[in-house]
Length: 385
Image (tube, rainbow, N blue to C red; front, side, top):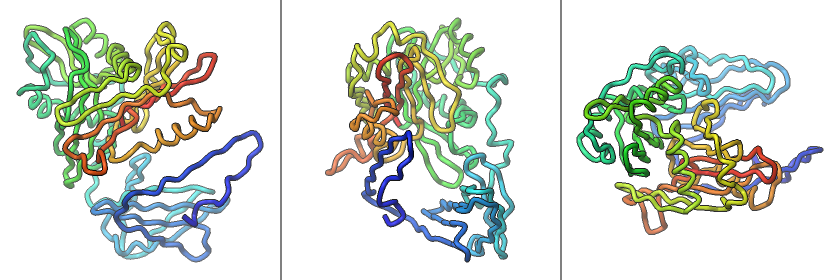
């Protein structure tokens, strides 16, 4: 804790607030490789097969640095923001040049996926998706053999072309639905799913993926406007499409209504619980929540805008423990911090078979967050993580 400032800095025109929550448990190794001169900070963190190298320039001038990485000879540093592959580590010190106050985050990898295999296609490019045969009733499409067909034929290529999917450089071996539930029934059903990605190195990650199904006319519109959101085309007695539900206005409205009404969604292996913190009709009148739009795609989340009154920020990756983004906004909301939109709703996911005597082991908060540009107090909604 000595690295944290004892007092908050003061800056004219800005209010600042901060808090710290110690971790319940930690793991792995972390150590510093600071060279002489102390103008650079070099930290290596290792947990299992994951090795991360952080290099930061603490000076206001350009700095060269030689890093003793002999222990990691043969590994390749892959820059974690742009996924750029750097020269392989050798026996001699590793040389870098850092811009003023610049930094690098590297993942040291043994086998690097070629960049052509991990680059998502541009949204305007046509996307080849499989055609799947389905019956007249679509409500139970994930409850039978159809789910396994989707996993084998459509799910892996779908994940690999999503900007929010963080495993493009690791080599995706397979993907499957580990939990799911029907949110909306009828001719055009919608589902809330948790997808597990399994990598060639044996690692696993989980992601939130709402899904929607639409008939032929709506399917054509989705394919033209958001081709990357398409998971599969549906053929058979009814023709349509299966696609990312966050590009379906009805599915987004269902998620919002879940928080407004504090619904509990019983999934196959867990529970999704929606909570209304301050999502009142006065704060978000129904006639101000249209049109529904999407912001530019982000690295790890998807944001949906309701009439420029609310923004639902969906954190795609499922990780154990409370979401720090939600915790920070919740704290600032409680302090009535005027420069951050307040948190007004959440959806949390708990995997039933992982719950223990101390409570749920896998709470997932923040599927989204909602902001307001309209006159009056802004609002933020957090949903699944």
